Structures are given as structure tokens and as C-alpha cells.
Amino acid sequence: MINFNKILFLSLFSSLFFLIGLKAQSKDTVNQASEKVFNIQNCVNEFDREGAVDTKVGYQYWFVDKEFLDGRTLKMSVVDPHQATHAPHSHNEDEFFFVLEGTAEFYLNGETKVAGPLTSFYCPPNSEHGIKNVGDTELKYLVIKKYETK
Picture 1 (spheres, rainbow, N blue to C red):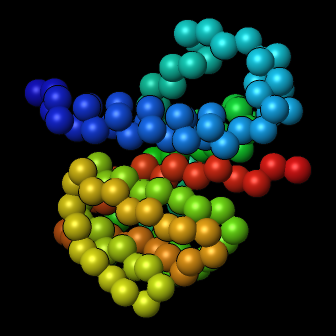
Picture 2 (cartoon, rainbow, N blue to C red; picture 1 turned 135 degrees about the horizontal axis):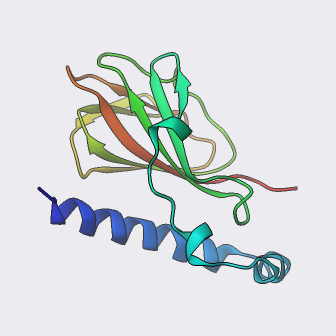
């Protein structure tokens, strides 16, 4: 059965992601993006497990990779029970996580919070952050990030 609340949240979250990115684009980036031809074939990306990349603790699937636009990305990470993709870390870019399924423990600058599906987590630039699966089922979450481009 289709979960309309999940679809609504994902649609709104994805739209917000792209609107924030558009606002932040420089004039040069807008010109570069306008040179790319967008069509239904390259603007719709349906999940395909064969296209996913296996990790030590699950897999990840890039719906939007760094090269598609201007460094903005949308990735789904799937993490096995009681595992984490990596230890808490920091980087120059900010990042959003959005939990689809499972139970996540969010870590931000020494503090933690456990939450379930339809929960977002914002990681400001240069903050120490992490996410791990503290449940007994797979954790599925989206990662939204704009990588610095050169």
C-alpha cells in the first residue's frame, strides 16, 4: 500500500532541497546548468538495487550525483541493524539527513537524539556529526548535500 504521508514528505523535502540550491547558485553555475538539456529520461531516477553501491554495513544509491548539476546531491543510505557507515566527522559543507525507515541515532557536536521515520537532521558546516542505526531493522535515510565544486 502507498504511504501518502511519506510521498508528501519526500516530495516537499526534495523540492526544498532544490529550491535552496537554486537560490545559492552563482550566475556562472546558472549559465552552466542552462547549457545542459533536461528531459524526462535524465530528470527521473527510479531506484534500482543493481545500481546501488555496496558498503561494509549496507548499500547506498545516488539519485542525484555531484556531476548532475552543480555539486548538489541526493543519496539514499541503507544501514544494517546496530551499524554506522562511519564515525562522527566534520566537513565544510552542510548536510541534511531524512529518515525513511528504521531507528536512527543522530550525533551533533557531542549530543545525541534517537528518532524514527519522517525525521530530518540538519548538520551545519564544520560541525561534528554522524548517524547510526540503533534499531533491529535496516535504517534507510536520504542524504542531501551540496559538495564544493572547483
